[in-house]
Image 1 (spheres, helix red, strand yellow):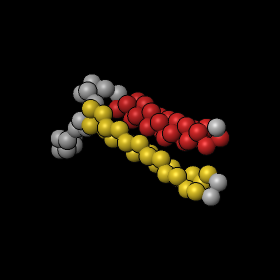
Image 2 (spheres, rainbow, N blue to C red; image 1 turned 90 degrees about the vertical axis):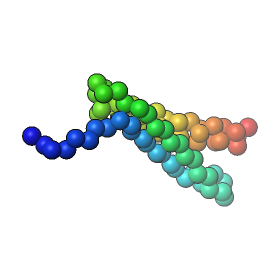
Image 3 (cartoon, helix red, strand yellow; image 1 turned 30 degrees about the vertical axis):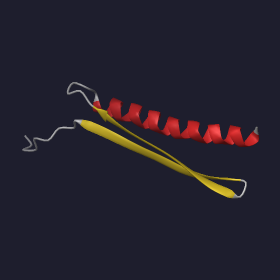
Length: 70
């Protein structure tokens, strides 16, 4: 058995993307940190966090593209 006693209490994800719109580069970024309950399914929690963080950055990009078109 392992002697490692550490446990994951928080998970954090960062997502960032740069896109060129016309002749200008824009960078979009989102960070979220979550407290993870002791009985949580850690792989599912990580997957959900990644999906949410990447989804937020995607939404930011969509919003600026729409604003620039209108």
